[in-house]
Picture 1 (cartoon, rainbow, N blue to C red):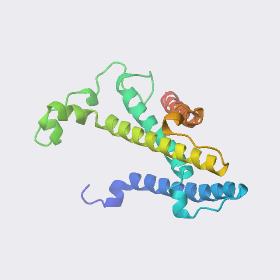
Picture 2 (picture 1 turned 180 degrees about the horizontal axis):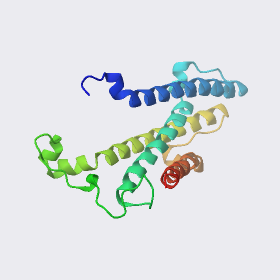
Picture 3 (picture 1 turned 90 degrees about the vertical axis):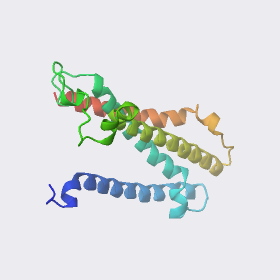
Picture 4 (picture 1 turned 60 degrees about the vertical axis):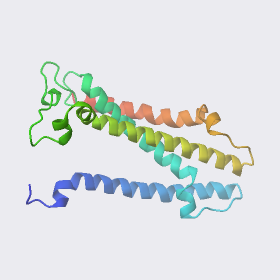
Length: 197
């Protein structure tokens, strides 16, 4: 493995992140043009690229999607710890204990949280779930911020009063944005589990 280069050892991550950046750029430019077209229809000046990247339109659209993706991965990781699906390659065995279920042993070459034990080991054992939960909650908060900002920007264009965060958190628009993505993520994970049977 030492003879293999950085790109060979990390090619999957690099390609996936490159695809994400290409699509994010596509989202940015198409969203920028779409939003400016909507502003022009209401007689408002167009936004430049810097204004658009900090607009509610861009922030809401970006983090609404990231939120649902991180929810999908968090749910997938957490549920596959305890739940099973007969015949699915995505499920743990119905009968046998698997290597991943065994308690880690604090050998000298083990990661330091395993050697330390206690709370550090507990955090380490759940670190992937914790990481996805933090990413989900952060994206959820940024989605909410962007959605609220976008709503208030739209209200301003229409010469209507804006709303507060406390009022908007109960607004059906925000929850529609979330639920329409969440349901598709659960369907995607269920499809992966069922179709691998």
